[in-house]
Length: 98
Picture 1 (tube, helix red, strand yellow):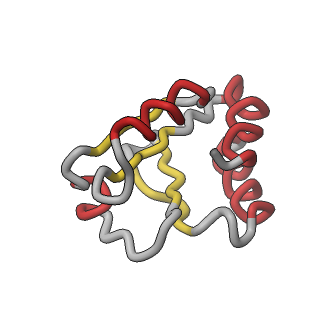
Picture 2: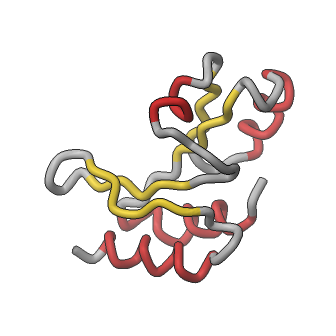
């Protein structure tokens, strides 16, 4: 599990952040996903058919999205958080305070 996801959920969860981890079954076993989900302080979705990543046209793993519901559900940020966690956190904070 990626420590920054845990930290962000713990830090910003009370301000409205809800991390949802989508585990693509085409890349992970159900048993491993269940083990990881049991440790996660956030929602974990096992995508048995890989539909989410197909619909979002995910090209690299791990890809993350920040989705806001303020003006209808829309993606306001997309990227790979492990490459630049600070930029991801800035995007989280910017969308919590709008």
